[in-house]
Image (cartoon, rainbow, N blue to C red; front, side):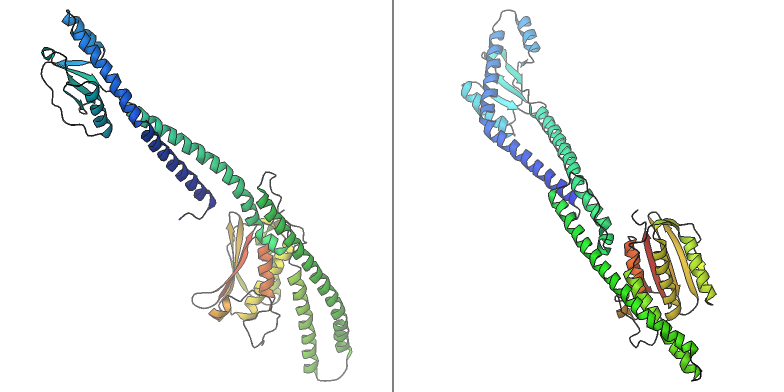
Length: 422
């Protein structure tokens, strides 16, 4: 029923405390019941003897006044004597019958607990001694003690669980960055050793991720340098080449450009922005710049959601992710192309939509995986890294890339962003 640590621990401690208290009260009653019955019966016997002595005084008015002051009643006729219902009263009545033999007596519970006993002399009638029970005060004090203990336990549990949960929340919030290779956040010095060990293990894993990413980056940087030099020479040779079929030359030039673009996508995938310094970014202005570049290429976009939205982010990486989403929509979708900005309390959402054929349902779960392309025939240019790069940049900003088919046809990519860590 409860999945979080705090309510589970509080429920456990509270339940144990209640059971322990009830068990203690039961054992206390069991251990002291007999002696309580004997003590109460002897106290009543003493009061009865005192009442008998007062009734023997010549001044009957003074005796009645003294009895009244002690809370003892006297009546000439026999009162109704229903049998007691409570086990304690029945045991006390038996004990009094032993202490005061040959005396008619009974413990009456209503309207108030009272011992009625025949006076020593029949002419004096019946004497009623009130039973001053401690059960009510004991119940109240027990309930108050139990509530106080529960509040104390709940407060201690809340403080202790908070000291456990807060570092875990920090690690949860830092998880996307840890996955991307960011160092683990600094935890308070009072955290439990197990949590500190977990943070250390995550930090070591993030360091290994950073080292692997740096190695890939160096590898791709060297690869791009070695490949782009001959590509540049090939492009220059095509420009200087005289004669030949112009269509073939144009196709070769396009192939060279595509190879160069693929190399650039590989580098962009590895350089996901982790080394770029962050700053406060106006998302509306960033979208306008991307749409201006699209317009210069002859592409028309409809923008909605002009509410101002800004967040601490890595602008170049964010622009790269946005360009990839726009290019993906233009390459695989159909007009009208739409982009919308939503501001959130802790970030923003950028929606990129088109009215193309969409993607097969079984392929949606695979989109965003590196090198995966829904177009298995490879009839369109690209390396399958555009959406993967956007997804990595979104994760670095504490968000995610959500992809789905639109109702009525089309495709939608939601770039969810949270403020990057300063």
